[in-house]
Length: 491
Ligand code: GLU
Image 1 (cartoon, helix red, strand yellow):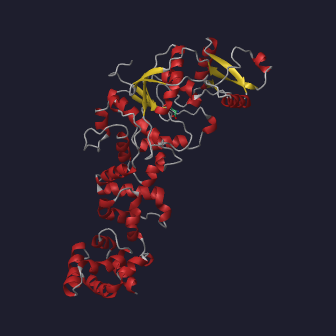
Image 2: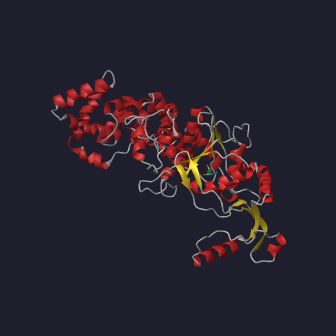
Image 3: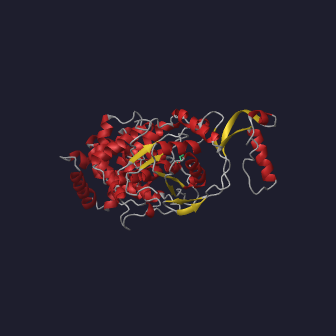
């Protein structure tokens, strides 16, 4: 076992097969934490050996989302490093001689069975309810010529591992202790297209890249016996295994992009979660807070205290409400300017089509001024536009909610006329001055209840009954705009 205090080398190894999964960030976070804790390195490797499943743009999204989360890697395809290349499709020359070595040693063999034959074989096994299924080794021990005589022959062979009877099925996992997995099939390690499969490439690269700890999702436990065999055959020391729990939906099913939008890392950006909130949230997945009331935790503190023994293997439930709460916390810990920048960047990236002409310089200024008004009740950045929209729209284009208008109809006419008079005569168009003068006129002189007195003004100015603080908003809009809206309301 590797010395637990030595600098560790860890990696995350996503496959660019679609937009990145939240699990990739989760794995990166724990890998990175341990690398930082031990003063070691965190490597990003792109596992693109399954050419049929590659999705254009996916690799760039992996870089973007992990960088956005501040999960920075020390070596990777984009920045290089001492073990480059870090993209498996560029390492084919490395894998081939190792496959040949395994064939020569009798640990692996060519298989010419066509996909049709394999499908038929599987069907027959199922129908016969055979206790052991898997490849029937038709090709094992045969030359190409011998095999070509038999049905279901394909010109381009694959290479399979010859799983021995004494394959070790139990292994020690740093998180789970001694665990075991079912007996593997004669796994394909080199495909007909000349690319290795994941199982070979992952072992070769983890070894050659000096990876000391393999930290990955629990779905890989069943593959580990195959990987351990490869290490044994090749005479290499196996890494420490750490299989993390899978993230789960509320109903305990595995989180998937099909069922849960939160399985997509990009969803968090689109919704307007702050990276520090998502990172903090992932720190709490299957891992206890440092104290009951210490769920808010900086990455540095998480690292300082990090210990594999604390990982809970019961699949953590992905509770977006908790994330909302954390996001609100982080939003409110930003300075006003930082929050304004974040909101504007979010609108630019995801909501500009909801705002004719996008964010003009004046609109950015308005957002900046409105931040103190909207920050207290903001959960995600995407909500900000809805809250400030009335400040950004032209006075004549302000949509006024029909229900809101109906609710305030009784006193509206007299309240608005009086307000226009009061506001026109104010020396300074400030929150306090408006509040005092309107209270004097509407409440003291006209005898209206405070709530009733201001509601029509709110609807006229904002278009709705519930809005950010009224007089502060009016100060941002300015006198001319406010008067125009009041006049339009009664017209
Ligand atoms: N390429 C694998 C994946 O995308 C990596 C698994 C591992 O970390 O070994 O899940």
